[in-house]
Image 1: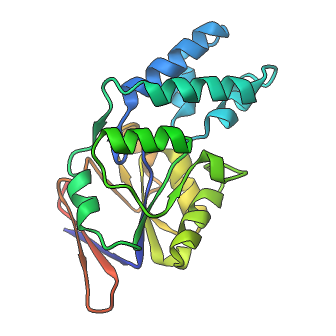
Image 2: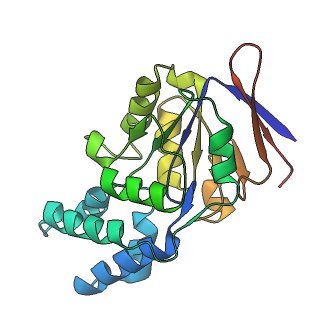
Image 3: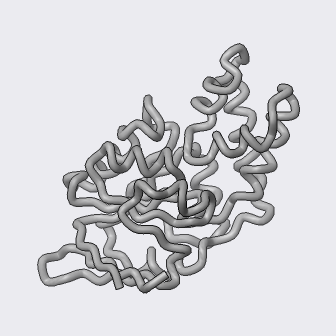
Length: 218
């Protein structure tokens, strides 16, 4: 049993609270074929990053702002196969308001749709691709999440599923618990701990007002 104490928890969305792997894969596979790129490599590169930044890296000759808007609108409408990560909803509903946030590389429209359609409680603080200049792996998204909660980033723990997100949270000064939902465990080695899902995760508020996270053996 591993235990951690923090003042707040920040969650990534895709691959952490919702399983959207199929929808993400469909969108990027279509885009890759449209532009003569290798789909598997494109899908791998896209996880955990803002759409527009992935496109800039892979196809800088395109009108990436327009391409990104089109893809994000398609993804917001495509909920086929998008399901909650096991144990995520129960965990969110157990957390005190004001001590957790969602920090995602998706747009606000897409994030809100996926949270709503999977039945998750909506966070008071939601940081999306629309709210930052620099996406993950830059620390800006996680710094904004902590700022929104009014909590020192160094007192926060992030739950992530992608190397880019792990690096972003660590650069913001946070410890990271990774979920092996999108990438193999060996690609998540920079995280403080790795779990399969939230079924073995318990969080309680202690007498100091902090959150105590317990991870069952995985």
